[in-house]
Length: 234
Image 1: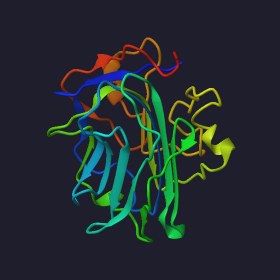
Image 2: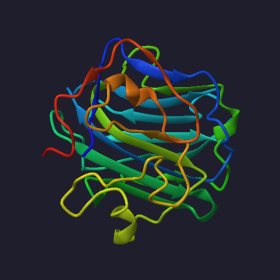
Image 3: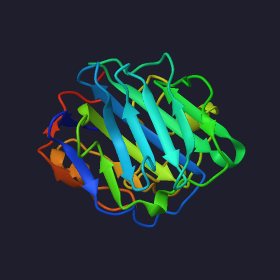
Image 4: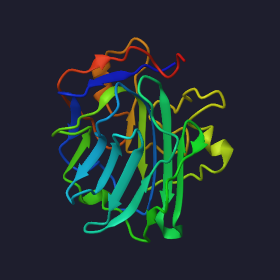
């Protein structure tokens, strides 16, 4: 069982005023999270880093599709969007990505179904994870995240091939439920990720900012509310 945190789309976001602790520039990465959008029609930033501009961004587009961009310091080397598997408002969805730019490999799944639009950018160059001076869950400007989130996991420098079903089952069950990732998120790969944001039943919602991974805790701006439901519920 996991619980969720609600971001109001107006005031709420979280920051780390540095690069993630211990992170290195790398050509690989894994990201997994659960999201129940509160509405559609407006682009919402889920995760952002700077500088460089667009160092690593994850955006829920107004079309309900996820767009991801990563840069090597000057040029976008990772760029892709999910396809017809959209994150419709009012329902829980699971998002799962991994990439290895050294072999131009990308795995993109929404609700356990492969979802990649067009031809992604996959350049053999390291993403500037370690060069960032701020990490933001959401957006300190406009278009803040709007809805409930649970089990946010980000592991720059790690890789799993999600075309292998058993690797997807490390994050999502065959019945589309969350998987226990371990107290520090090390369950899927054996190593803790840089970010693992998790809420157990009974925890205060502010504990969502307490990073169980290795990258450092977030500071909340605004006032998070407990999510009305959890991906464990449906």
